[in-house]
Image (cartoon, rainbow over all chains, first blue to last red; front, side):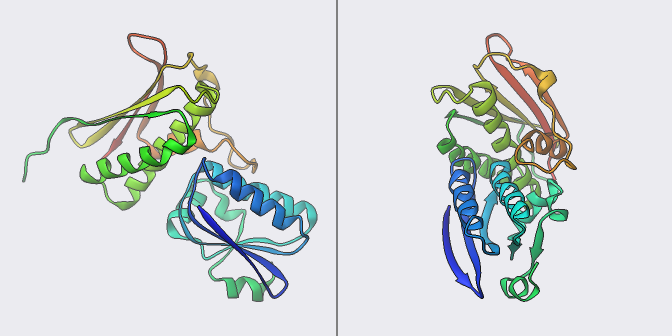
Length: 110
Length: 141
C-alpha cells in the first residue's frame, strides 16, 4: 500500500493505493488519525484501493469515529468497486459518507 | 462438455505472519479462477481465506510467527471445499461469532465475512492431531 497526502480547499485529501490488508492497515490507521488530528476535514480517495480487508475497514471506522468526536468531516471518495463490495458486506456503506468524486465531496462539505 | 477434474486443486502453506498473506491471496485467486469462478465470487473467496488466516494468526497462534497455516482446496462436483489447517491450541468455537453489524466499531468483521460469503463453514478440531480445521464449501458460480 502507498499513500499520498495533499491539501485542497482547506481539506486534507489522503489517497490510498494498493492493498490495505493486515500488513499495511497499521500505516493506513496512522496516516488517517494523524490527519484527522490536524483538525481539518478529511477526504479519503479510495480509487486506487484494489483490496481491503477487515483490518483496513477497521482503520476507516476508527477514522470515522475520531472525526465524529472532533466534529470534523470524514468522507470517502471515488471508492473502487472491489473496496465498495467489502464496505457493503460490512453494511458500512450506510455509515460512511461516500462521494462519487473528490470534486463532489469538496463541493458538498459533509 | 469437457470433463471437470475432481479432487485436490491446491495445497499451499504459509507462515502465520501478516506479510505472508499476499502470497496466500495470490495462490487462492489463481486456483479459484482456474476452477471456473467468476470475478465477484473469486474476490469473495479470497477475502474469506484472508480473513480466516488473520483469525488464525491473531487468535489461534496469538501472534507467534513460527506457526504454519495450510490450505487445501478440493473440487467436489460443482463445489469447492476449503480446509484451512493450523497446529495452534484448540480454539473455543463458541467464541467464534460475527458481531452485530449495527454496532459500528473497529474489528470483528472477519467471522461475519466467512459466514456470509461461504455456503457452509465449520470450525473443527484438526483430524489426527493437535490444531484446528476450518472447513468451508462454496458453490462454483
